[in-house]
Structure formats: C-alpha cells, structure tokens
Image (cartoon, rainbow, N blue to C red; front, top):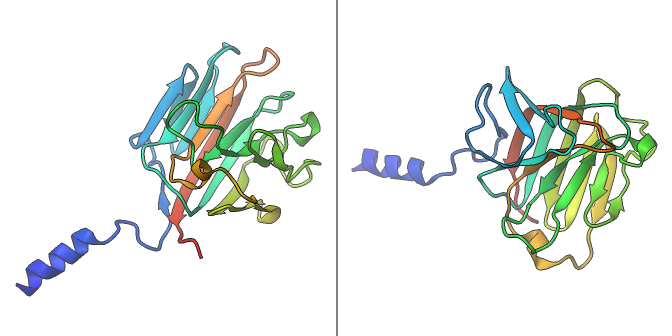
Length: 204
C-alpha cells in the first residue's frame, strides 16, 4: 500500500520541479514545431536556422509546451550582415490575429537591431550600442519573465529590466517559446542556438 502511494505521488510530481532542464536534446527537435519555409537543423547540440540560399524564406520554430513564468538561458551566434536579425519570442500566441508576443530581439545594434525587448515597438533597446554582444562568437543570454516583469542579461551583464504597465491580457497567458529567422536586405542569413535550458518560476 505504501509503495503504491509513493508511486502515485511520484507520478503526480512535476517532471522537472525546481531545476533547469534542456529544451532540446543533442540531435533531435522532438518537442518543437516549425512554421514557414526556413531551414532548421540540429547537429551536435547546435540548432541552426537559415534561409538555405533563399532570402525570401522565413521561419519560426517553437516549443510544443507552453510556459508562463520562467527563466531561460541559452547561447547564440548570429550572422554579421546589415539588419539581419533573429529573436526569442516569449508566450507566443498560437492563434492568428491575437497580437504580437514579447520578443528578445537578437541582432546588431549598429544596424538598429540590438539585443533588447520588442513588442510592436521597442520596449527597451538593451544593448543599443552593441557594447556587450561579441560579434562572431557565442553569446550567453539569460531571460526571466515573471508576469509583466521581464529581465534580460547578455554575457552576464543586465541589459533589460522592464515592467510592462497594463499589458493586454494575452501577453500574460502561457504560450510557446519560439525562435525566428528571416532574410533581410536580400541576404539569406543564419543564426545558431545551443545550451538552451529553462526553469519554471512562480509569480510573486
């Protein structure tokens, strides 16, 4: 009887309670959905997104699981070309027409595409002068989203500390975490991600 009870309790407990866990494994994208015509590949723990030679291609890859309050860490590396940029979407709506998601933009500050917080306009330009991001190298990104409060660290330096006053209700509902890539200025760019882990938090 006691053994059965312990088994039932273990099954009811969260699988990843109170610890970071990976969002993709070394050579598979199970647990993710893709949209658009961009090409996504996974090799040796590195996810690469790009236009596969065609700058008109675009694409989003997103988690099947939905998240509301969480802390996310990852490494990224991005093509150094003009306004080509990528991004990490938080709580992305799954139905069309609801509205844009919070996005941690990933790009070049010199081209007006800094690592910062974007919605339908800039909420916080973060690393606007491109002083923290390391070109052509792996960069460490840490994102914390608790309700309307969003924090971002780039290479362990705080670049965004923002509370959204009176946000639309849909922005505070659980949704997928998504990554994007699309061509810019006729250039087919690329972006890479690795070591992507998440821990779910509770709003205080």
